[in-house]
Image 1 (tube, protein in one colour):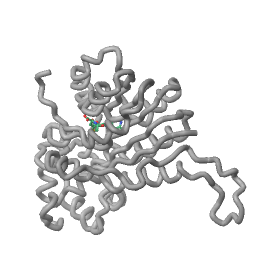
Image 2 (cartoon, rainbow, N blue to C red; image 1 turned 90 degrees about the vertical axis):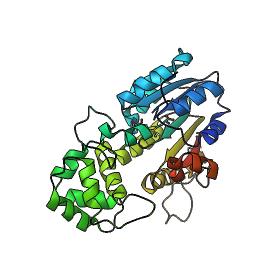
Image 3 (cartoon, protein in one colour; image 1 turned 90 degrees about the horizontal axis):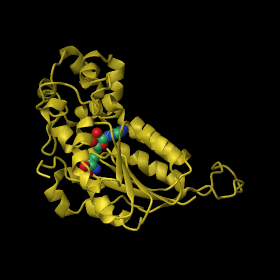
Image 4 (tube, rainbow, N blue to C red; image 1 turned 135 degrees about the vertical axis):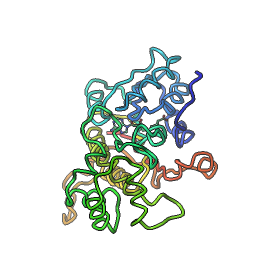
Length: 306
Ligand SMILES: C[S@@+](CC[C@H](N)C(=O)[O-])C[C@H]1O[C@@H](n2cnc3c(N)ncnc32)[C@H](O)[C@@H]1O
């Protein structure tokens, strides 16, 4: 295939190592993107079938071409992973692996027309172009309370009140570029990241309901009947990692009696399986040098054995 591949899959060796013993059944790639992980898994695990999900049509179009040589072994579904995984788990009993490499792809971040980048001439940030809420709406129409909430909760910004005030006073903003430049006036300077990074992160999470999606995906897996299934989640910031860590701990718990109970009365057989990563797997120095995006990647893995 001649087209340049716009995204390098993170932690690819670690993901391959984890999934290598899955010898049959279905692997779901919840975040197909540019089929980086999917193509490697189809190559390595010769007898599995794969279902790839993405809500971005341009990622799907690219992946359809990239996966052509695996015709007959893969299916691609467009939609939000929380609802598509639910449909799949209701229909299939042989799902043996679920991978989610959440967040945005390099192409989404870098392509100016998508409105995610600091240089972008528009304010968009929608992964799925068919959804209605865009960054433009959040920045220009959210009231003070809602803006403060997302800056505090999704950007983890201490000076969220000041930033919300600043945005409200200076809007409307027509482009990400304008907003990013203006924010440098009030955001602390940093050698590592653009001053507007966390504000952009907050807006992007809101536009795409990223934390809601992750929570619903975990709910879906928890409430399904899937068994003997490896669940591997790669996240890129502490908000997501915390959600995954907390949920895996809950799943691993055998006893669900209230903490004040003197004696266990639940039977202590409530665990969904076991955590395979006490600490998250992170990228090696070599990978970080090659692909700076991998620096913040954290992979946590749970084996469902009901
Ligand atoms: C980090 S990229 C995945 C890259 C992929 N692993 C690869 O190697 O090419 C994340 C992808 O997941 C998609 N995505 C993020 N959240 C989603 C959701 N809730 N439902 C469906 N797709 C989602 C994005 O559109 C993006 O293409």
